Image (cartoon, rainbow, N blue to C red; front, side, top):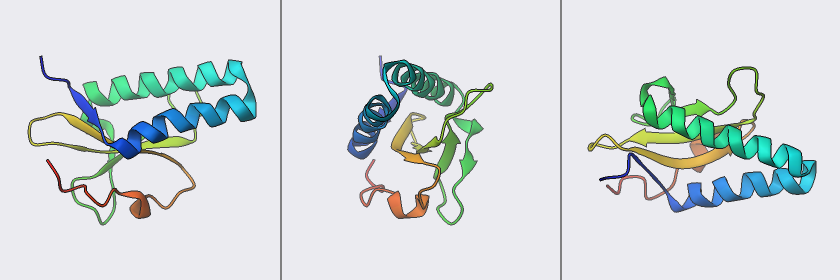
Length: 110
């Protein structure tokens, strides 16, 4: 069975670094909460890729804020939907970041 999503190497780093920073800065309890928020957001996104909002000026790219249902989170997934229907996670970025500067250079590769 083909995976329903894939992650760019930069996204893999982001997904590891964000919880690690949370652990260091806010402790184990917040680390586990934030890790769960990331997993739940990824699951929602893969099940409903249309829920993101289009990235202005970058056709085919979308953003999805991971905070939902009263759970505050300051990060968003940058992603696209590939021709085969799989969601490709490109980055997990903090809300304060200029997203257009963090689109991977090799984004054209299928």
